[in-house]
Length: 100
Image (cartoon, rainbow, N blue to C red; front, side, top):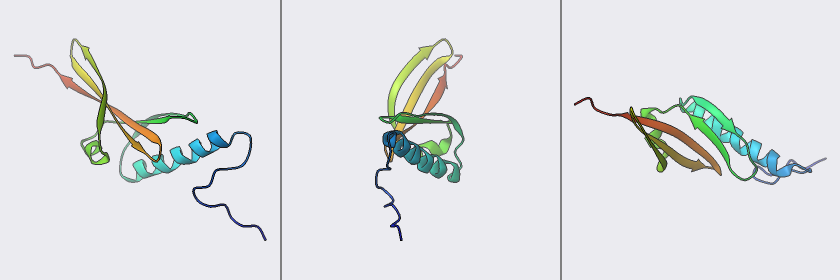
């Protein structure tokens, strides 16, 4: 009889870091989808995977830290990020310039 692997134990094999990153991304993606967020993109890396979601009012419930600002003619883009289980979840909020 074989013993099942522990839930947070590293996987076995040559690409164990990527397999572990994939498992973390899957857990975070499922959590986001169950909470009603829309996933736009997933970038995988054994060091820092990123899930980009559609900006929603509920994003603030995830926690937030601003990582960049990009000014353009129409206003300002603010890229926000929060880390869950070692996976960065990010979204961009655009603030339009007022026409006054």
